[in-house]
Image 1: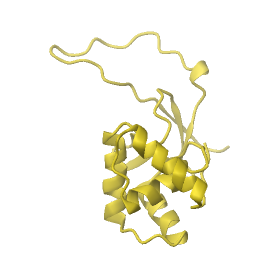
Image 2: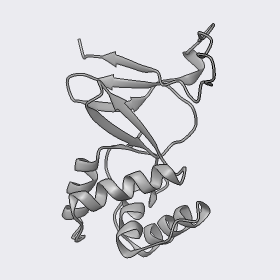
Image 3: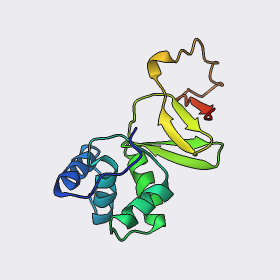
Length: 145
């Protein structure tokens, strides 16, 4: 998972526009610039709203932190991203929407993909009456030794 952000180029803007179009998300100027940062080079990313806000500012984009939060929520609602919450406090947004586990690096507070093929869940508990399991998030906390 790439931790740097794409440069905003004509090609990255086109890739961002295509990404938004697939989910029928209206491509406002701010959504388009954030999408180009997120997927403009074809790499998947785990981002925080604060990290994306700082990257946008560094690339010369005029966007507020509230707009970044609202845009990330809109991207999640459209199925373009998933939100992963660690410790109920910090949210990460993942551009790879396939089911997969994550490593949470305690020392750097970063999230990265864990190998799905090495994870085995033998059994889940039955969902409560009148409910269904919508997804299972696996976050494996690690620290450098």
